[in-house]
Length: 270
Image 1 (cartoon, helix red, strand yellow):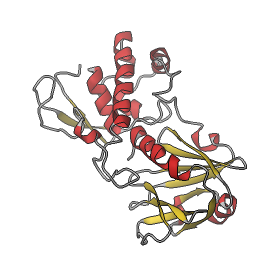
Image 2: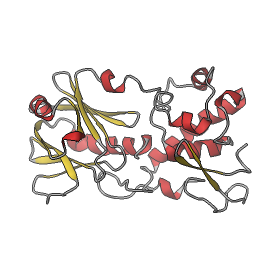
Image 3: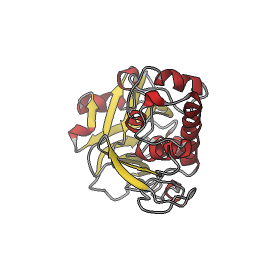
Image 4: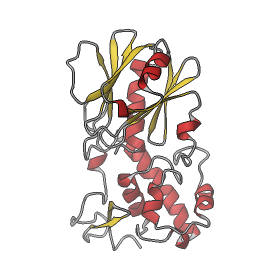
């Protein structure tokens, strides 16, 4: 699933061709793509709306439209967004298309059909439950400590909880815990102030690294232009089971936590 850096990469790629464009209409051949409202209402409401800005909240792409409409897209497992010319050959995995006033199309390609599209007047209807943005200027180590206070959960699944912190997924949770020197099975209540500060720094480090490298092309993720990201070439532990740890030389191990593959170095991570 695209995580914060991958979604941010899409946002940055889509701003230039889409900002200022007007949506001329919409098409859909997989009704479950549309979370709200029903597609006929969505089509009517987006038609004629200008795209005034594109941002990210957690793993969601947020399109601010004219007349106080907000289009929100979650890519889920296999979603991909691209802007193409109207005469581009059809793709059987493209299930939702937004026609643009210049003849182009914003295509939502989604082979596994888990992605979702929302059109709302109030973004909080969809985004309200999300936790803080880990790269925001006002997100501090003290704020992380405050959110950990009173929680007694296994550390790795807690980091994947989007109501705790928004945007962190399997790849960057494993990487952040490695750089913080923390075992993913640790109870969150056991962290010392020094360890919380290390986790805060490592989360910001690996997420910014992922953005700088334009995402990790480990599964199906590719950038909006179809090119691969580069973060997969910089991971320390994720999907490196049995390989040598770059820091200590010992083997990287894999376990399953909360139904998710989890990779760590048993020597470097306490």
